[in-house]
Image 1: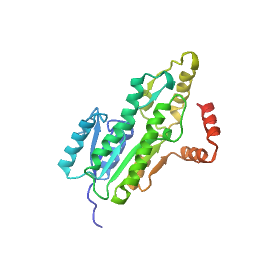
Image 2: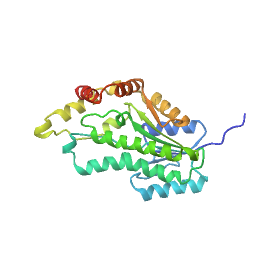
Image 3: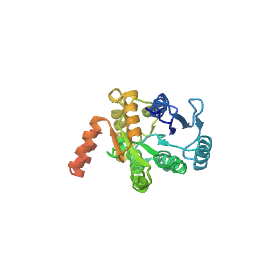
Image 4: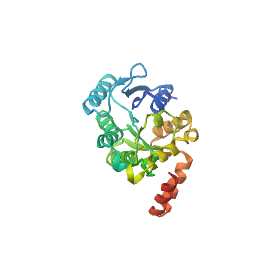
Length: 259
């Protein structure tokens, strides 16, 4: 059987967690992987802030010039934010959207310029793009925006042979929780609710999916990438089914009580 040509793969958020594991899995498959992150974790990776469009464009153009093309791009970099929506500092809201949404779009837009038919663009989103959570509204909104961008690009590029998908993963054991920007002050209106909600979610850390098995599932979604949306985690698939069949108000009220 003829051996396939190694793919040229660009992955953001490559220094830790899901991104680092995806880099390892693609390299183990014989592909050429260039990781992008603020902190370089492997030889050949590039230090870049995905919210800086000019920096992303320079990095991606350099990769394409070196290898002649880009076959797969995975927009994985992101971060979390929690707190009462009305009380969050505006600069934190803007930073959240800039990293999770604009940063992902920056990378994919730049990579598409060097992608031919057969190419693959993947947004690593979140289950929170589908299920809104109280005191996580801005994070959920940023990931929902990622999904909408992915769906739009899916339609625009389908007839040009380029696959686009969004992979919505549930809770995974990474440094994501520890690195989340948290605002616990609820003021007079919310009191301790933002803090209690954050503690309740953080207390379930031991129930999160293990990193390597979860990353392997995400990797499989990235490789086949035939559908516009993938959900990683059985319970999140069940929740998505319930979200679709239950009245919106009922589903939101149940979620509010849980979180």
